[in-house]
Structure formats: C-alpha cells, structure tokens
Image 1: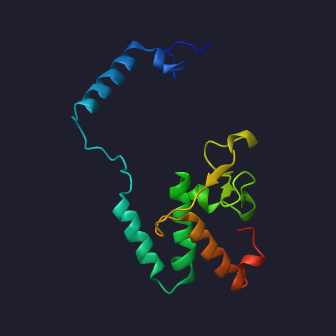
Image 2: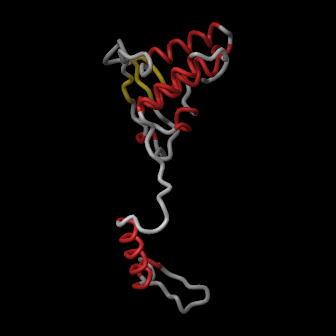
Image 3: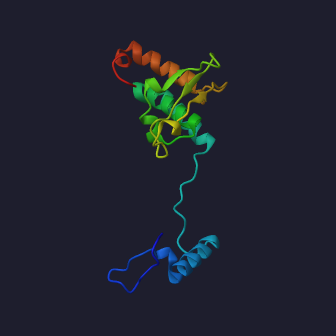
Length: 159
C-alpha cells in the first residue's frame, strides 16, 4: 500500500496523510474554515435566475449572430444539462437526436466532460421544452440551427 510519511528523508517521501503532524494541521485548518476565521472565501457562487434571464435577454437583443442566437442556445443547453461551459462548447450535432421513446422531444449526450472517460459515462439525457422562452432549450437550439443552416454555416461543420 502507501508508505508512511518519512520527513527525515531528503527529500521527504511517502504518504504525508499518514503523518500525525500533517493530519493535525489539516484538522486545525478545517476547524478555522468552519468558524470563518482567516482569509475570506474565494468560492464561486451559483448564477441567480435573474442574472441568467438578464444575460439571455441582453444577448438576444444584439444584432450580432453569435450573441443573438448561438450563445443563448449554448447557455440554455448548459443550464438544462447542469453542465460546464466547456462541456457544451464541445457538443456536436451528432450528440443531439430525436427521442425514440418520446418523439416530441430530443435526447443529448455530453461526451466532453471532466467525468467522462468511457462511453457508459455519457448516457442519453432527455431534453425537454419550457413554457418560458428564456429557458427553453428546444426553442433556442431550433432557432439557432435553422438560422445557421439558412446562412450556409450549419451545412458544413460538425456543430
């Protein structure tokens, strides 16, 4: 298994978490963090619904094609999948298809994610519509794809 921490070696070697001193230090740090003592937290906070809605509304009012159609579609898809931005940026057309079980909706696969290393790590996920256009991923993707194909861009690339 893992060797014990040998701080006398030069350089120290082994597993530092087997060291009493290191474990005591970690315990003290966790205690301070719990009590909110020390440096203020730099943890990110989740985006509020009003911030998301404002960003979608601002982008959709732009004259730029990407800001008006592509980025809102990506944001709605990211929100729907509860995914990271880079996961959605790598999503391709082949990863979205009509649901065989529920033909009024779509299914999608996130093949690019920090947790995906095998095919079984990315099962099909259902993509449902929403009555609110600011959140409806089906509407966002449909408008983007139709506009992109109409402009000639969507016929050649994998996205």
